[in-house]
Length: 163
Image (cartoon, rainbow, N blue to C red; front, side, top):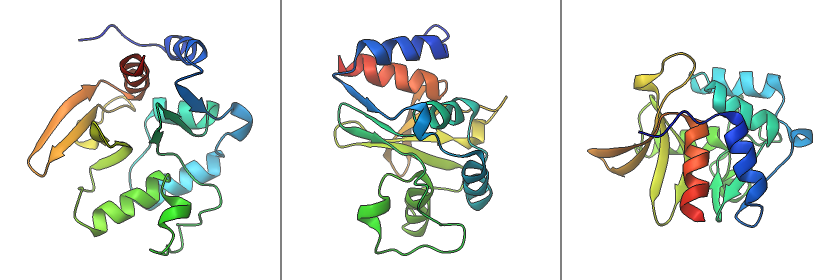
């Protein structure tokens, strides 16, 4: 098990690895209203560490693997259009809608990143506790592998693995 990863550990690692990460900035932050509407729409509260990411970086990728975020221009609380894959492919709610529609996930799993090499990373809300939940890698319909205690550890490990 890894040592507890703090926000400062993640910030420091991001700053040291600008060649590997492409993150937004706090000025791009997702609004609290947008976060609340997204949470209400999917019926799951985002974890504190994921909200911190949305507030400090808004979006990002690590070694080309996109971390799903919230697209402010996507008004999915009313409806969604399945022909918008290109425009909303990085939106965590849009991906959740599509994954549920295609029976690729459950209502207690929320995909946060897809890697062509490592597979799909998701929050496991069956283990939600103290405003956090672990992240697993989806291997197959019947098998998942533990990856990180929380989203901060996820970011830290992905950057480390990319070095």
